[in-house]
Amino acid sequence: MPSAASEGDMRVIYRGAEADLLRGRWCGSDAVFKFRRPFIYRLKVLDDAIRRQRTAREAEMIHDAKRSGARTPLLYFVDPANALIVMQWVKGRRLKEAVSSLPPEGLERVFAELGGEVARLHASGIMHGDLTTSNVLLDNDDDKSNDKELTLIDFGLAIRTTRLEDRAVDLRLAKETLTGAHSEVASKAYAALLEGYGGEVGPGEVRDVTRQVAEIERRGRYARVE
Ligand SMILES: Nc1ncnc2c1ncn2[C@@H]1O[C@H](COP(=O)(O)OP(=O)(O)OP(=O)(O)O)[C@@H](O)[C@H]1O
Ligand SMILES: [Mg+2]
Image (cartoon, rainbow, N blue to C red; front, side):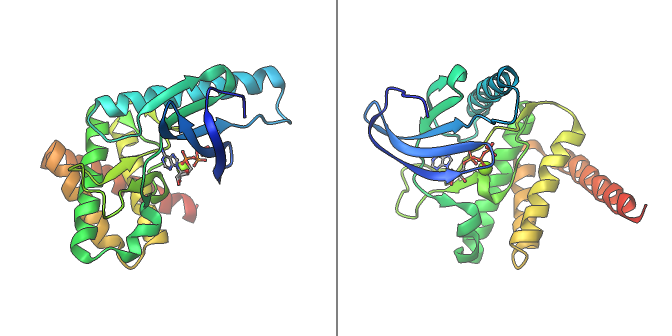
């Protein structure tokens, strides 16, 4: 981790495949430092370029997502040359861990909100690219300062696109994550997500995108049989 203008102690909260995430303080606020580690087996100039590019892209996409009206962490500092993003620390837990303890009406509310957030991204030409319940944070119950409960994170794979196929890929991954990791509530949660999505972009859009999801699933089955 390069020496940025952080204050006080830092502690590692997550070690991902590419990035380390540390919690610390930035200009008086709780912050998360996302640092993309060097890959020693990659040619250094190439590795530096990749990490610089992904860092800049993730920061841009967080910014664009926020402009679309979705809730994302505030960006505090971006240093592409050092592969570092400093952002607001969001108090809460990952939706992945929260799902099993949500009451039925809470589950529907939360997934409808998620659908609305994703629809806003899509309507403004952004595909999240990694729409799993690990990349959504749910506010702690005691924090009701905002009308929204969810924050979208991890825009490392996000792209600008208006293709129906890309929007469907996002929804397909969300559906697959629900079926794989939260099977007992998957169909309710996915239905609520589509409800929220449709509330934002209208029923015609939902019909088109769910048709495309079905088409992707059909292709997947066909590919497996081959
Ligand atoms: N702004 C934030 N506030 C609170 N916790 C966060 C924040 N950003 C990330 N986290 C925590 O760190 C974890 C990993 O973050 P993130 O998903 O961005 O990294 P990653 O999955 O390793 O990304 P990549 O695969 O692109 O390297 C999250 O699941 C979440 O628990
Ligand atoms: Mg992630």
